[in-house]
Image (cartoon, rainbow, N blue to C red):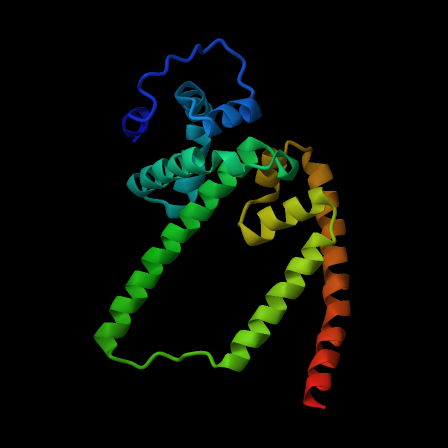
Length: 210
């Protein structure tokens, strides 16, 4: 896996004694700098593999996910927004998403095979279900956007991407007690926001019915 990735940056010759500025390195990667790509790989590959291994379990699948993550990093480097978090958080979030997608894809494939074997009909959600789901998702996004950046990042990492509190603290570079406190405050605000949004949604539906 590492050798395969090194094909992309085989001309690079990073100095291990250099201090790595991830944001500057990623900006260089966006400009096609293979040396910067190699340095980021050396710094982040063990963490990426660890996240992937923890989710997919299988080491060979974790290696595949790791390669996909660095391929995506190379292609999407120009889209990184430092105001939304660190390079490490960004890359590890990609890793977790890729790993989860891999697990879901495998599970979906197995489910399809089982369905074909049983020849059972598949229940399809109606348009009303789709409207309700979209409305709920929009309400959650709106309420998440009302949180502070730290609260929002912590809640998203813990409750939408499956990281533990210590992992969230490490990803955000904050003390664990601070993360727990911000997450508690964020969840309270999120709960209150969703509670306020529900009557509004019901009122909107009643208006449509009238």
